Length: 296
Ligand SMILES: C[S@@+](CC[C@H](N)C(=O)[O-])C[C@H]1O[C@@H](n2cnc3c(N)ncnc32)[C@H](O)[C@@H]1O
Image 1 (cartoon, rainbow, N blue to C red):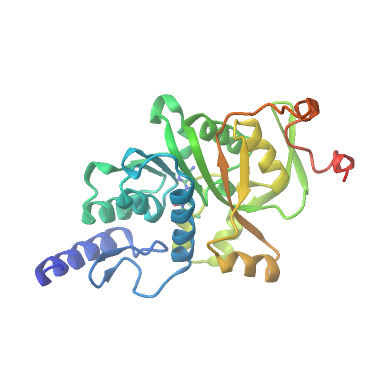
Image 2: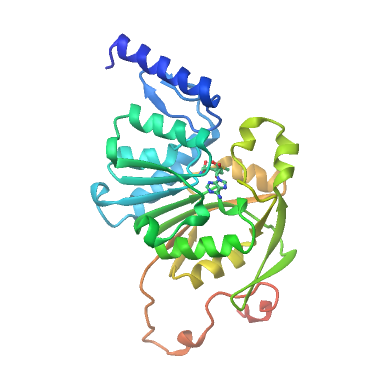
């Protein structure tokens, strides 16, 4: 139980951060007994936090203390800070100072010390040489803010730094509208105009969630994203249906948008023994050209 003096100190420090960088926009962290960064009622981020934590806890193959985690485009730090509180070592990359300052403040207030390292960087600079490798990579809410070809280069680097578990939470193109070529492959999706976000939301909070400098982003269709992930060395890819994030279901049914959480595992390809034929099949499929391949 924190002393009233310590609680008052946390409140004053949080207020100083807000005076300098504005109010917290999304990530709700409990900083002390009654002190939240957003407020004491659950927010949309709380549903996601429960999902992501459970996925990592269920699928990690090392104890928390041995786990190295990368949180890409961390916003106000909630998901990476959670994993650091569980015992992992976390590197968090974020391109906006106002967001990273809040993440770093929360991590320090929660006593994470050198278990949490925030870096003010563009995720498009990601590389194993610069950042090392990680057991778990969180790629949450960032893919759909990158343009082509950056999004392809970025995902290749994600594949290069990730040694085991990748969580991807992203908007998707519900149908293939345009195609983009990358390294001899064709990927399907749609363009998203980042300026629509500002026009639509019209509040500074959402601007702090958007792309750094690109006006346009590429949104993959599901099969194209799966195919790209397979091509970068992920051997299994699943979609999460629980713990639930009901907002995604509402978006899909009522708003016609498609958002999902995937987990991809960097395993070792296994050769079949019952028949050699599976080894002759192509990796992934092109949803436009290869529909005829979906035989029973
Ligand atoms: C929609 S928010 C999602 C953040 C968080 N991962 C989450 O799931 O709640 C997108 C975040 O990406 C950051 N961002 C956008 N483009 C970036 C880039 N190229 N490099 C680093 N951060 C970026 C934004 O500042 C914002 O914090």
